[in-house]
Length: 117
Image 1 (cartoon, one colour):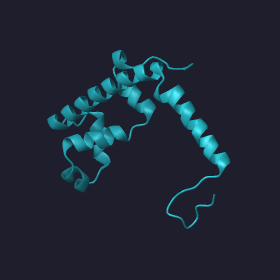
Image 2 (tube, helix red, strand yellow):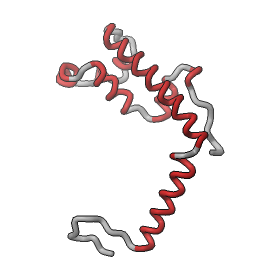
Image 3 (cartoon, one colour):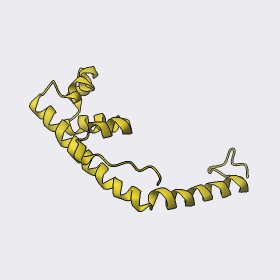
Image 4 (cartoon, rainbow, N blue to C red):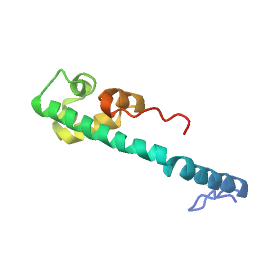
């Protein structure tokens, strides 16, 4: 059905059916997949490790750390003065691509390949 000028979004039966199939597929193969769920714990461990590492660098003023060289040195004084150290770390980590994030992790925390999932 047409949802133009309506307070909701409506889909044709064909689109609605395709979205339901996609959602079912995603839950089966992604959200509830035990192999992927195992990798999520290592991602949490990497996040915790990196968060603490970069927060410590900020607190110590370690300007050789990549949080300074790759991120903070390019920010305005307004940003630097109005954000707490945890907020700065949050912004830095949240802006990382997946592959960059994984490359920053120590080897013992890096997940193994999840190809063939």
